[in-house]
Length: 307
Ligand SMILES: *[C@@H]1O[C@H](CO)[C@@H](O)[C@H](O)[C@H]1NC(C)=O
Image (cartoon, rainbow, N blue to C red):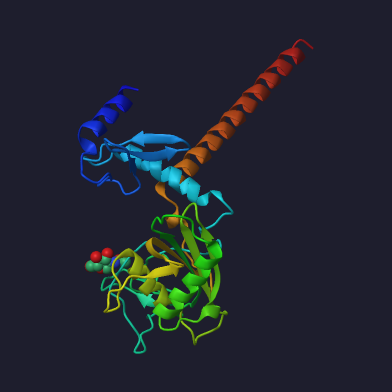
């Protein structure tokens, strides 16, 4: 309680003294009032008052992030892996080897002794190995899920109009990207999340999804790769909607072959503890049973002796 009061006073005193009522250190904050006061939603109806003159404590941020993630996943299962075999790019950029036509070579080593196999999007789909690693062929990515968040807008956005606007924007911006490859566009206004599934038939080697996905990733995450530097936006009525987050899932024609190495240390630790506990239990049971039967044998012996 004391902390809340302290934070509240801090917010009143300095935090929100800027001319415009906003929070420079936290984009998710909601600010209002005179004197200006900012807060962060960290749970259902739970408002955490903020001191926007300083960095927001990590604990509040994590709480808010968990809350937002939960909100984002709540409804209809929008977003997330399209299928169990989908994966994201956890490695980031490397110095790739390319074929003459611009395709990725199946095996990539980033100029080191450590190599791995990639899909046609250049994303690692095997464990890392040494130079002798074999990658038989370049496995095609036939399905890409683009999961975006748009910046806050005032007023409501019609979901159907937004879907049409997204398809138009993608088609126009990315070299007349075929609309029939945009299999499904979903929208969740509450989470401001747009999910675009881009797919081609398995075996299709004419059309490419991965270049468009990369352009879009750069458009949203960094800066446009296009010379004119115009931002990607969907225009719905009089609203221009900019995007602020993107996550890309890849689905290959063949499932990736990552192994247990993917399991985080935490999960492995839990498995080890559980296995040890089970083994200890079994050993105890075994010795207990043996002692029981030894006692029984001795008792039997004694009973027989007098006879
Ligand atoms: C590739 O090498 C560069 C520079 O040596 C490094 O910064 C980068 O993290 C490497 N990428 C991968 C995926 O190993």
